Length: 321
Image (cartoon, rainbow, N blue to C red):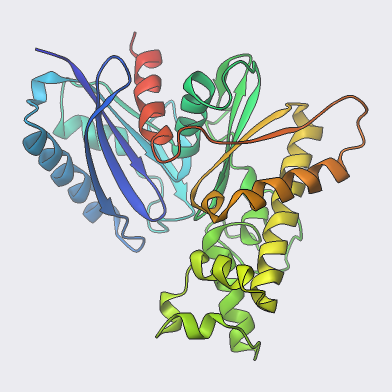
């Protein structure tokens, strides 16, 4: 009986499930929406129910599972398997995810980590970061986060929260607040959900934009509409995309100065706007970089959509050899 590992990539928009074999091949996929206002007890029930659904539909007995790994869009205490806070699923705090899943799936190795860490592992081992001993994965998505590879190993920091660089402050006390509670962090300027909030605030304050014609209700507005407005030459769309490019490049440059890591692999939904986005971020980072003969490499993720699942599998392999 072939042993499989179950990977669960919880994002700010969707939850992706994948069963993977020892060759890192995804043999079965399942996907649901992420309910951002869900309470912890409901989230537990949702995960357990959907795991059961995946196993049943894939024809996989629980005894076949060699491990379950969950990547969360959250600050995770890795050693204790606790989701400390989540910028996306705001009611999930100090949530003992590993212990909860162990009760339901006893005898199966369980691992809980940050979703961007999982993507970093996959891109370093199998994707765009292959061959670099040091690498940073940058998630330009619903949120903004990073995963650090140092000396070919995932770096989690003292409390397991390394990589929450999107919450580094750039204008302390000013601007909008995201899930971290501190106004003016990088994420509040350079992620999909906050771009939408900036757009809505501008529209509320009287800004004229084609975006209002793209939706029947402003509650439907998303980052894709902002990107389309930018392509159409819309002034507000241009302002918001330029804001994204500026703060994303500044974020990468600051990480380069702090850690002197030269490879930045960018993934996430915002990278689907077009090649222009990373090209412009590269240009801006190069303008900021005054270090002679020290190039910053900004690369597009090679495993879009799957790096979270593949990374979960790799993390299980590493943790439970």
